[in-house]
Length: 154
Length: 321
Image 1 (tube, helix red, strand yellow):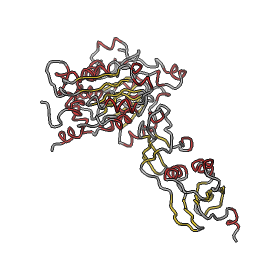
Image 2 (cartoon, rainbow over the protein chains, first blue to last red):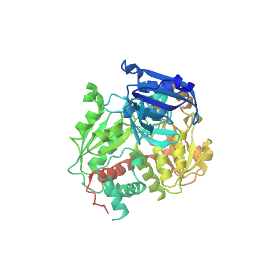
Image 3 (tube, rainbow over the protein chains, first blue to last red):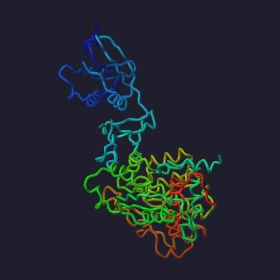
Image 4 (tube, rainbow over the protein chains, first blue to last red):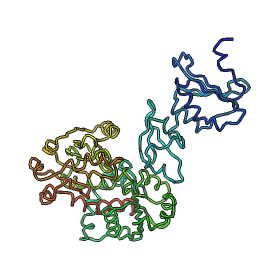
């Protein structure tokens, strides 16, 4: 068996997030919310893995969990090169490149503390994707631009 | 359908949160309508297109001229105002959300004029209301009717906005009015000259957007040089309440002042504008010169806001000759 396969064993059911830019796996774990996973959701993390496409990459595998669309959007923001594979019975059932929608809802806080979306109002944060390479968002309420997503995850 | 009628009809029932919500042709229609409104705003003629309309003034932040000019505009159009002028005396004090307050107001009035200390509040209000919402200032954010009356004052003085050389002086970083005005001037092909203390320069992202629109932008730190070739000198107040740090405010407070000596080298037709209130940026001696246009600018708030209210609430096909 190749050495690479031994580093993280295959999972029976769950989600594999591959091609995460080198060093960002821990941020992806924050988005997944590992502390909220149940006892059957073992998480495996590989940091600094050799990658033909990226040079180096990180990989996260979570057993018995599938990501919500909102978490996929959050991963798309901080790790736009990531691919997400849904595994069932050791087989890849679905594989997709993360893709940013036109609007990002409920994923980030507006960096403008005085924005109405940061007050006690019954609204979720909402950002429009105004540029894709590199990704730039503007708050749908106050128009504040944000390109530093790590510090503003909700 | 003509362009101006199409623009007029497209305004009917809309929210006006940012100057960017308006197309160039819609702005032109509003400015033309504002010119026709002047004798009505002066009380020399009478018009009542809002005779059956109620406009709610929801002011959650102190305001004198904005609220009074909106109220005057409603009355001059034959409409009626209901007003929250003191949020401390309203249900907001009991912890009611802005969304709920606006939802409630939209069932009492045909339109809502909102001034609120939080950026983005008017956009939120627009979603909570099924009646048109006009943003009368949201924190350090947008103040589109101020931009409209600034444009109206320049257009009245020069008959055009295209090609005007406009100096934007003072707080170009935090100034609520300046970013919207710069955008609108770029839309009309004016030349922009930026003059500010180094710590109060126009934010890069705003400048990038203006340049992306094809705006001609120049920076000139020497005030006397900036004034020399200008058609319009737009002076802003350095607003203490917008600074995160008082020490930063004290470094720049009082760093510029327009007086007759500075204006001695100006073109005879130069006009000086200021959104008011002024706090020492323009010497009182300038008031007596033909350059002083800031009180005219303050008056034009009424016909401009009349034009907007009529466009949003009046019969869309009606035109005033």
